[in-house]
Image 1 (cartoon, rainbow, N blue to C red):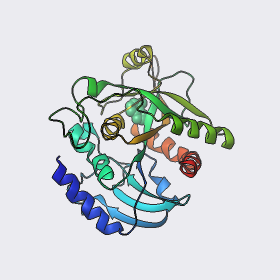
Image 2 (image 1 turned 60 degrees about the horizontal axis):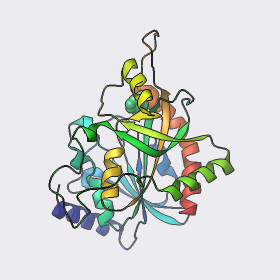
Image 3 (image 1 turned 90 degrees about the vertical axis):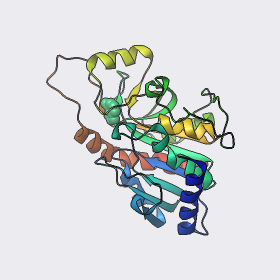
Image 4 (image 1 turned 30 degrees about the vertical axis):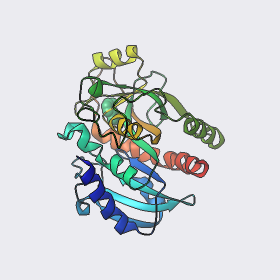
Length: 277
Ligand code: HPA
């Protein structure tokens, strides 16, 4: 993916939404697409109509870009995302974040479904990311590998300030006010598509992970490369299984089912945060 493609795609989207200008981008993860019903005056653009845009192949990811108004702001919502495990490169799956930047968006909110690794987490909880373990990226599958486009951002990107502190504080404040349970913790990004083995879950826990999932951090890298501010939220759709002595098995249906149940809380949290941003 290159500068020219970002430009072509952004120009197409600009034409479809003109004269409106979104200030915030929001990516909705597995099972969380129901959030879009909150948007007022929506303009819907199916991914299939957007030049250069990848199609999502995963059940539970709708595949639409929607500009809409909420809490007095125009936000651009990406309902569904592409994943590394679908066979796309890390550069390809982060294309939408580059395009958002070309649209003038300087803040992104990234959401995902994740397994709870921290033993104190329950299915149905939410977690604000404050740090990450990027396994795919450390192993060389990250979107910043390759020639650097200096016009977009620096060759070497720091990760310490990835998760904007003032946004995290806003989320905590909203959760307190609305009495929504909200954790803050470390998200481990794995490639998937298999769910982790019990031994892997125990290993992730030892390494400091609180939640595990297959997305989001690729997008965090690209957003930070371009200096965008990031808020990232996991919905804990299942408690990761850390023992083989169980008849249970992790499954995608459960992820979608619990994800849908978390949507009302996510709406409350996001409305509160968007009102403060
Ligand atoms: N592991 C990885 N990704 C996930 C999980 C999980 O347990 N739940 C939702 N996404």
